[in-house]
Length: 218
Image (cartoon, rainbow, N blue to C red; front, side):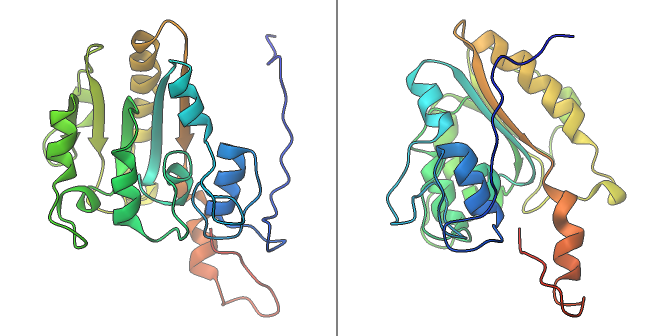
């Protein structure tokens, strides 16, 4: 059996709490530093930290993010954005425009094209930058044909995608599409983060309902 040449160990507590959240936990994975709960791609003193996705871009690797939540949610955001608070979704979407990420698949379309903090249409801006942008209302992901000479965005929902129990099935197809696409984008290799986001949502639903037990918000 082929084995990975490098194995890493990760302690999940954040810089300000023994119970981490997705923002601090993902930032630790992305940057290799601990930070406070709610921080996105920032150190504990609110300094932006270089993420593994950004380093991969600098080394000419192809890069991609897949999530079964909104693409601006804490985990994917921590690999590409730099914000002091995880729920600044429109500001996080704006940070995406500062990168050359090759592939994005996830929800959160409304934070790009129907913004409240400004009147920018980030989807139109992405298309002008050379992205092919698709969404759930027009094309099923199995019908998307990725071009190796372009970059690809597929929005799976306006906000959060459906749960598996209510019909979400795109993660296997998205993962296969992404690997095949990114392999063609760079001879150097690629970085791809895939998140099955909704596995912890049952914990959110139970928050505050169990006596004498604290359930973290992820």
